Image (cartoon, rainbow, N blue to C red; front, side, top):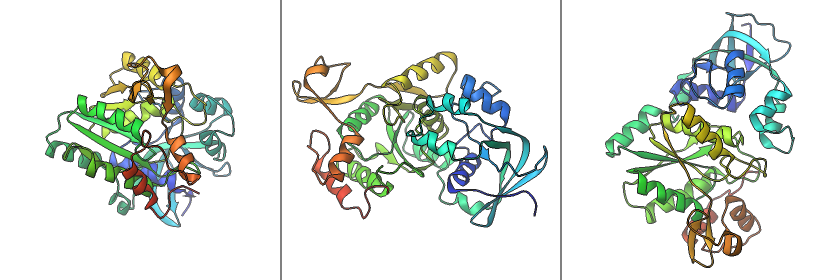
Amino acid sequence: MNNVIEIDEETLQDIVNIETGLLSPLSGFMNQADFKSVIERYTLCDGQVFTIPVTLDISEKLFVEKGESLHLFFHEKHVADMEVEDTYHISDTDIEKIFCTLDMKHPGVRKEKNRSPRRAGGKIRLIDRSFLEDALKPEATRKVFTEKGWETVVGFQTRNPIHKAHEHLQRIGLEVCDGLFINPITGWKKKGDFTQEAVMAAYQKMAAEFYPADSVYIAELKTQMRYAGPREAVFHAIIRRNLGCTHFIIGRDHAGVGGFYGAYDAHELARKLSKQYDLGISLLLLHEPYYCKKCSMVVSEKNCSHYETDRIEISGTIIRKYISEKGIPDEIMLRREIFDAILGCKKIFIE
């Protein structure tokens, strides 16, 4: 068989998510025109908003022409075919437009630079349907929401166990909407992040003991983190729209990493695109929750005047530091029940 490519797990998951409609309106990997449109204008060529390039990298040595098929293998098993529309190269300039940096300390940049710069675009056909069995499917989540009688659903993206700041945001979402869809990321994450076992254990404990019955639905989303900040925040909203959410929470430094983005850059891009286009989902742009010593509660700078004087920051980074150093986070940051659920996991951090 000619034109055989061995793909990695992240590429396979992109194929599965295209097939299920999770990445709608994509029907395949982006061709050059769509790639350029996404990085320049935040839309596909047809004008639909899409903010993250989803591409297939191929070897410089592979000779392939328009109309030919690429046969994609995973662990030597034929899983999908792609009809080639074109091949092209991406540059450092392109990568910088996606991540707003070329610093190799940025995990998304480093991962992208380790891929081949040559890309192939075209429609995908999944051959091995067994990969769909455990996949998160829009028709399934929409059915759940309908059965629960939820007319409005707020989606929440996370890669960390729940702490008091995220709890604050989620409770706001439940005030606005009929139901809360907690949709933690699985798939590739950077070293030092919480494992999916730890994230799910924390949320299952939270849903069982603290949230009203039938107000929360939890399902894992298998896709890689790109750490692309503002672009990825809107990308996450598009995915939750496809899954049936009517609303989506974007908080402080959504999908950010290591101080590469401004605290509310994601809010700025979300506002800009919401004014220009119908995203098909309402965005709740919420400010950073923190514990205020003066107010004795979790607040935000939108409703508290003590940000500069009495603020105690709450974040996944701080919680990770406490736990990795065998410390116990204060209950103003993390519920003890959640802490115990995390400690009960076999593996807490990605190595």
